Picture 1 (tube, rainbow, N blue to C red):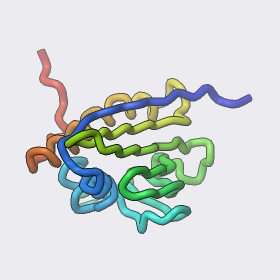
Picture 2: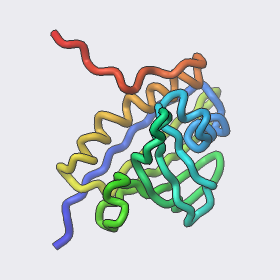
Picture 3: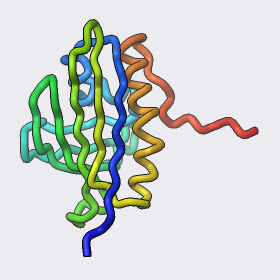
Picture 4: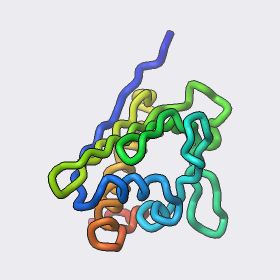
Length: 154
């Protein structure tokens, strides 16, 4: 019996260029500034990628493989917690589609093949909006957001 899956789609518009958005995703020194992590890979199809915490410990949080690369328009990767890297059923897929939209970029992030109700699916719903808002802020203003911020208690 196969597991029930869910997906998450997020669309945002960024006053930038497709090349700069693509580089924000794939260049560790840029991702660190808005995500607090570095995406590390040679970005060739079939290569591994790692999501490394940009602190002194440099722990690998997420892992996956590069499925498709078409700079600066499209990137597809698989995605799993590093602790579940050996379990093929733990992987989901992330597709970044980057389109010119007049003087902006429309970025569509589709995270699919997620196990419905899983901790990963719940984390994705909370994580992607703040990460992508931070990327937008960095590219438009030069400063990312605090993606580790917590809601203020009432």
